[in-house]
Amino acid sequence: MEEILRVEHLVKTFGTNEVLKDIDFSVNAGDVISIIGSSGSGKSTLLRCINMLEEATGGRILYHGKDILAGEVGEDQYRTKVGMVFQSFNLFNNLNVLDNCTVGQVHVLKRKKDEARAKAMEYLEKVGMEQYITAKPRQLSGGQKQRVAIARALAMDPEVLLFDEPTSALDPEMVGEVLDVMKDLASSGMTMLVVTHEMAFARDVSTRVVFMSDGRIEEEGSPADIFLNPQKERTKEFLSRFTAGSPALN
Image (cartoon, rainbow, N blue to C red; front, side, top):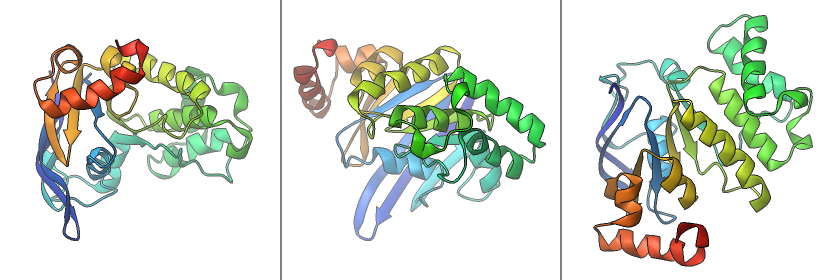
């Protein structure tokens, strides 16, 4: 299995607060890795370091063996290959849906407008948003915005997609429509790294689950390992809180 990303001894501090402590893990082609853990455990910071939105304090992030923190890969080139979907959508409010999905292709990938539009339409159809191409973000529901954000990320032809709690800003009835898109992507072989509180998604869709606590990877393994046979007390305690409140997980 081809290794795309490897994180080695990653550390991130904000002032005297050490948010990530000696993180090690790898991402292979086709992996769907769910990162779970309590709020404040460092999950989103880890994703932001991997996408270079935060500057790591120490360690290495290797993309196909090249250290991005040492500048061995250009930042823009790397970001097109490691795309990001945010919890707050981050759409351009002044652009319509189609333009939101073409602007990055034209300016960063230097695609011709016609080619960029064709690519955008392909992915807007994939996420069920092709009939909204002239709408502005303010005219869309949260679930629709997130589906557009996923289409926009896909249109850049990434090798890996990072999802930072993609359903946490959504009303409960809209969560399903976004998770359905993500499940389709996973089944199509997209490599995904997902920070999520959706435990049923982590259990049913992931190839691997990483449990973080207090800035460290406390435990990782297959969904069966983590959900059915967790080894660490903190993992057991965390999952017991979720299973108590979710009949779907029992």
